[in-house]
Amino acid sequence: MSYAPSGPDGSTSGPTYREWVLQPQSEYRFELAPNTSIGIKLLDGYAECYGTELATRVVYLFGGECKAVIYTHSGCTIEIKPATEYTSEETAMGHYQSASILFEQMRVLSLATVNGALLDGLNPQNIPATPPHILVLGPENSGKTTLCKALINYAVRGEHDEWSPILVNVDPGDGAWSVPGSISAASISTPLSTSTSACPLGLSASTAPTVWSSNALIPLTYWYGHTEIQRNPVLLERIIRNLGARIEERLVQVGSQGRASGLIIDTPPAFASSSSGDRRNSLIKACIESFKVNIILVIGQEKLHAEMQRTYGRSINVIRLPKSGGAVDRDPAHRRRVRNHQIQNYMYGQKIAVPDGCDKGEGSYLFQHEPTSDLSLAPSSTVVSFDDITIYRIGGESMAPSSALPIGASRAVSELLPLHVDPSSPSSGVLNSVLALLASAASDGEQYDEELVDLPVHGFIIVTAIDIPNRKMTVLSPTSGTFTGQTAVMASIDWQEIA
Image 1 (tube, helix red, strand yellow):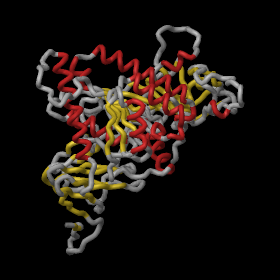
Image 2: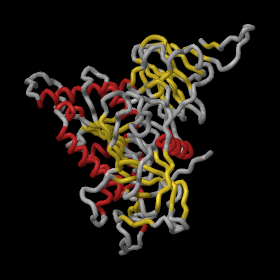
Image 3: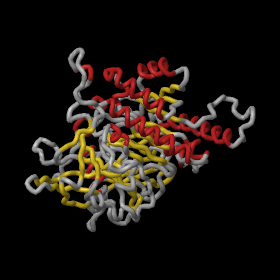
Image 4: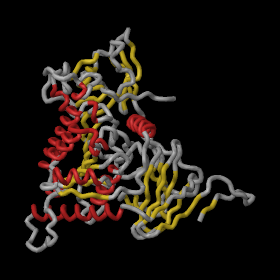
């Protein structure tokens, strides 16, 4: 039913609200326009958003051009403010839940094997007794990130809630927990929520207020610096292997429960495109080798499934899952807006306006499953000397693919060679650039070479102003601090604040 708030004279005004009764195994879908938000409240029954269970009688806020679904396994009633009308009984969530059950069985059997508790005859289906290391492939707009998030959420909220699977994002076009141009990984122990396109995998310690209880996520991040894999696939492969090596080190240190939890890898859409050629194949191979992949999930695309089965089917279980009907197309303009939102969110935090009609008498509101109080960050604008920060660019400003070089020609600049950038040069391109601050090297004073690309990132800053005569620049950072002696890398990612 739908309704509108009544005035003192009995008239109605404001937006129309609606209660939806969802049948078992159906979903409510919504797509938000820019600068709009909605509130969703579960009145009764059971509902989830990509594996994150919703509490009853609490308003969940969604904004930032969020495109998502509310799914129910057993049926429920939800209230939407303002009202939108888009429900479907054709959902792929049942298939995703079945896959999640298989992976849960693999975790349990793996842990039982390590603990010496696995007895003969207890695994009649011959399910692999190894931790699931899952590579998710699919074309653009197929819902890969959604599937990864759902599988993670089902794992951490199941019967064995001690699981802490690692979620890996190797899609540089998706900012994940930081900014576009990076790849990262984090150990997940609590459900990841969905509220905005700017936070596809929830919030990390660098992008959320410290008052939030879930704000303990600190991802391991490497800087690629571009959104397309074609810009420098050699660099992308190098940092993928670096990330895999660091994850392998962590798995050695954690207990058997952590190792049995496994990991899930989200990939860029170019991994599913045959037009990417050998670059795509080498990057997929790098992921499989670096993350010890034993399962490949292919969303929707039959040709890609057949190719992966032919190439890796003898050693890896290749599974095809249907594309969710709730996966919507995102045009290039939308993706550019989301990337800008992600950088803004990294610096300023994320706040979603409470929609009209939800601001009185509703009790509590949740954004990212946390109270909506104190949602903003207070970034620091600092003037630093050109000599305080050493800036590099990896492989030159523009790297043409090897196939575009003349026959017999070789590169003058290696794809992995750090080139020093002088901010005082008018053609430096430093203004408005996103700079990745690198973690300290093992030893001080060494000459930087290609080993610079092996260093992870500990934060990002943006150059907002350049004063060449005084050799100073203004940088924006999520937190205050000194930048003296820091090493930074710039690439093609930039951002300019719009008043």
